[in-house]
Structure formats: structure tokens, C-alpha cells
Amino acid sequence: MPRCASRLVTLPEYPLGKFPEKKRLLIARGMDVIDLGAGDADLAPPAVAVERLAEAAKMPSMSRYGFGLGLVEYREAIARFMGKRFGLDFDPLREIVPLIGSKEGIAHVALAYAEDGDVTIIPEPGYLAYVGGTQLAQGEPYRYALRPETDFLVDLDTVPHEILRRTRILYLNYPNNPTAAIAPTEYLESVVRRCRELDILLVYDNAYSEMAFDGYKPPSIFEVDGAREVAIEFHSMSKTYNMTGWRCGWAVGTNELVAPLAKVKLFVDTGAFMAVQAASAAALDDWANFVPGNVAVFTARRDAAVDAFRENGFTCVAPRGTMYLWIPLPEHITSAEFAEFLMEEEGVIVLPGSSFGEGGEGFFRVSFVTSPERLREAAVRAGRVLARLSVGA
Ligand SMILES: Cc1ncc(COP(=O)(O)O)c(C=O)c1O
Image 1 (cartoon, rainbow, N blue to C red):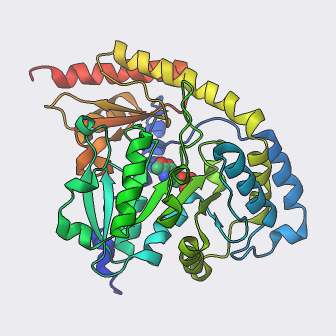
Image 2 (cartoon, rainbow, N blue to C red):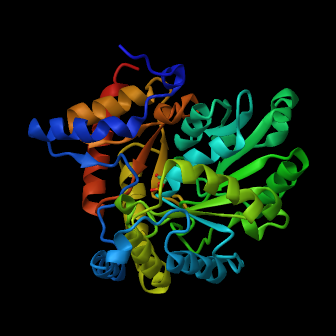
Image 3 (cartoon, rainbow, N blue to C red):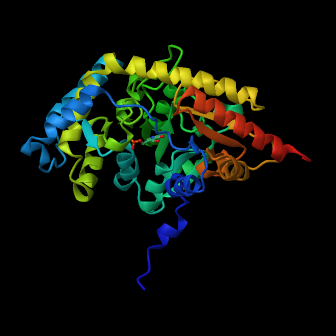
């Protein structure tokens, strides 16, 4: 039998991969399943995006290959968004790379910047495309534990010199999945300064830039002086516009830094469906009509989830960004055991912290992606499991 490459053996399990099938089986057993696993809301995308998709799908030109250029209208809408939202100027043709969802670009960027023995610094717990992209590119992941005591930030000065010398990429993501941490401006300034000194590419994953509460406005890394010299920023249509399944995002940075990613993509894909790019352009231009209202819905969900989990025996911080609660567990309960019990006995899907890497042990992640009523019901069930697992501890 043909043998697969050894790099596949070293890839971790992808936790979300198994849930659709698991969920199907639980439902078949007659369970009332509440799925708080993936960051994938049950809400509608903007009406203008749906209308534009329907219209564009009827145009033969949209059904053709987009190649790397894609739809210029989409690039221009991205440039307008970066200008209006962050006050930043980017050339739509040279400094933006349309992506088939931001995950695609985040995973591929390592192929452009890392090779045998090159180190990438990976926050752990963290989004698994960082470690996946690194290992598929034969890079060497250096896992950096994000802990509450250090505000879930990566301090490059605590990384051994021997590692820093070989580091090509630092992945950062704030607002952060899964910890929901946000990064202070001074922190981002110091990271950019260190990346410039060390010649490290800063891959800044800004998938949750528009998913923030209580007046907080997450910055672009390019608001920091000097960031253009070292950073590529990744954005997504998924969370902002409830468009996870549409697969559309972008990378942005100087032409020198994004061109290698665009080159990799020329050999592995031929661009997202152009009708989806047209719809994404319409959604971006509709920001003011759609995003604040959508964030208000998530704010109500966040508040309901925070209150309900607190009332049911958990401690949790109310996040100022993302769609996640990162909830600590008592020391004697492992996150895998808790998540397994909660799913099998109560039909509630959450992610164990350990599925984001060992650094995530001791916590579980709740995505507040469903109604306040269902979130409250999930918290009651989680409280029952906590009580059961605590007996005799
Ligand atoms: C931190 C982070 N980055 C990137 C993504 C990828 O989003 P998409 O590929 O849908 O744009 C996600 C999705 O959950 C995420 O949590």
C-alpha cells in the first residue's frame, strides 16, 4: 500500500474535524444537542451579500477562473474597508491577496517563509492552522504557552536565544482564539520592534477584528509604526458577516511581503468563486448597516453565556472580543474528560482546552454562537457535569 509522508504522522488531531459525525450520532440517539464547538454562528449573512451572490452567479464571467487577481471589485472594497476602519492606505492590486478563507492563507504562508529547520513561534493554545502550516512546510514549531498570569501574551524575550536565532515566523492573534485575550497597543509596539530587530515575519491573524464589545475597537497591526516592514495581516469575512461557509478572506501587507504568498497560491489554487468575491465586496461596503447590529446580537449572547456559566459553578471573564469564553476547570478535572462527559451525557459540544495544544489544558472553550436561551440551557447541563465530576475529589 502506498505510504503517506511522515509529516502527516506528526500533525496533531484536528479537533473540529470529528464533531459533525459525532453530532449526527448523538442526534440519532435522540439527544437534544447544543453545539458550542466551532466558532460558527447560526445567524444570517448580510442580505446585500446574498442578493449580490444570486445576481453574480447568473453572470457567465463570474463562473470563470479568478486566478490570483480575482475580482478587482473585491480588492477595491477591501482597500476601502482598511481605509475607513483603520485609516490605512493599501494598494488594492499590489498589497492585497484575496484568499479562500483566511485559514487557507494562514496555512500557506509558512510555505513561502519557512523551510527545513526554520522555527516558527506558535502561541498555544492557538488556532491549529499555525502548527499545521508550519509542519506541512517542514518547519519546526516552537510552542509558547499562553497563560492567564501573563495576560495570554507572547513575550519574545523569554524565548531562548538559540530558538530566536532560527525563527522565521511569529504567529499572533488578538482578539485571541481561544482565550479571548486582547493585546494592548504598547505590547503590539514592542512585538513589532523585536520582529524588526530579529528579522522575523509577524503573521498577524486579525480574524476577530470586528467581533468586539463594550466599545473596544481592535487595531490593525499596521497602526503600529514600522509594522509594514515585518508584518502580513490576515482578515476574514467569516465571523464579521456570518459567512463562515462562503470561504473568503484576505492577506494585506507590502507587496514585498505578500507577493511570496501570492506566488505559492498560484500553484495550489485558482482563487475563490468570483461571485463569492462580489458578494464579499457588497458585504464590506455594507459594514455600517450590518456589523454594529450583528455585534449587538453577540453582545447579548456573551452576556447571557457569562451570567449562566457563572451561575452554574464556573468562573469566567467577560471577553471584550471574539465569540468565545475560555473557562477554567478545577485542577482534578482534565479538559478532555470534562468535554467528553458533557457531550456524551448532556449533548453539549464544547472544545477541551487541550485540543488547542497542551498549553490549553485546564480550560474549555464555549462558542457563544446560539441563542441566549440555548446558552443558558447548555450552562445548566455543564454545571451538572461539573458537580458530578467534583464528587469525591
Ligand atoms: C484565529 C482564527 N484565525 C483564522 C480563522 C479562519 O477563518 P476563515 O478561514 O473562516 O476565514 C479562524 C476560524 O475559526 C480563527 O479562529
